[in-house]
Image 1 (cartoon, rainbow, N blue to C red):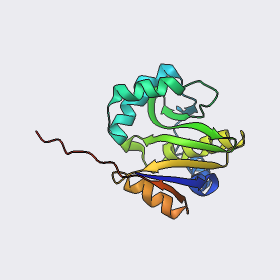
Image 2 (image 1 turned 180 degrees about the vertical axis):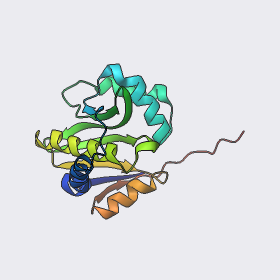
Image 3 (image 1 turned 135 degrees about the vertical axis):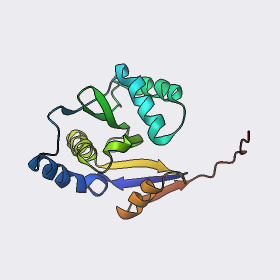
Image 4 (image 1 turned 120 degrees about the horizontal axis):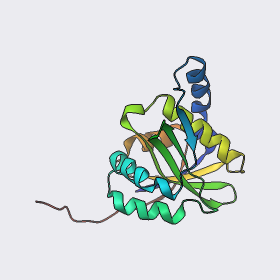
Length: 169
């Protein structure tokens, strides 16, 4: 597992203009909205997290409920109507730094208006609060995140090797 640190403008910047383009070309549905998810969204967040990153949904529910709605929570979600289609779960770790625990977009909405809207609104939300840097982790199972880290010039802060035995049926 690798831990990275990156400048927010470099990490999310291209989506600011992309979202403006999506709006101007009518690609954003009228029912689209972003919001700060609370404990009442825990089950939907957990299901989407398990779909996007794997893991056990019930474990994510407990982790999310522990942080949601607290003063360190700076998460954001995107929905189309009542359907959650993406989120960024983050918390403050320093005065100007957020740690992104999880960032998932439903497979049907990746690289489109939903991702652009989520990044656009998230950056406006957190930069207004003074956050400029982001930390995040990526393992071998997250090649897109590792590629993004390289593209935006993220600093490799730490690297851990996880020793575990393969489970066989």
